[in-house]
Length: 110
Image (tube, rainbow, N blue to C red; front, side):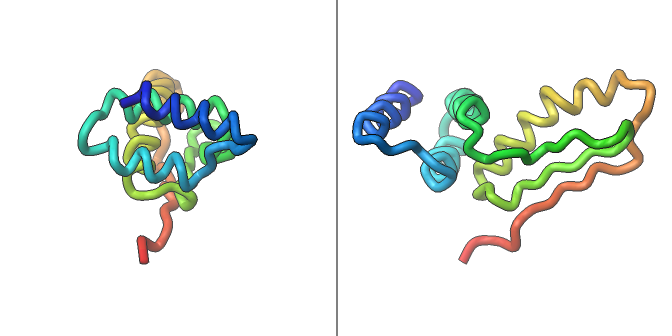
């Protein structure tokens, strides 16, 4: 399925279009329940193309924040897992353990 997503992105690129937040959100919503590995790979593509912008800004030591307001429910799950498996891992071995992590999410779907 990742191959199909890449083909879709190549087709969009051929038309002079770039996949945006809605494209990634829709694909990640579908993949999060059916193929977690492909969802993670697709999320890495989203990171490489900076689709979501800065959602995990650098903060002072001991403070952490995720802004997932532009993410769909499935994309937010993938992003949170990505953060836990990459960024938070550093926190676990840091000298300053955070007292809280701020997770900002949207108000839901219509």
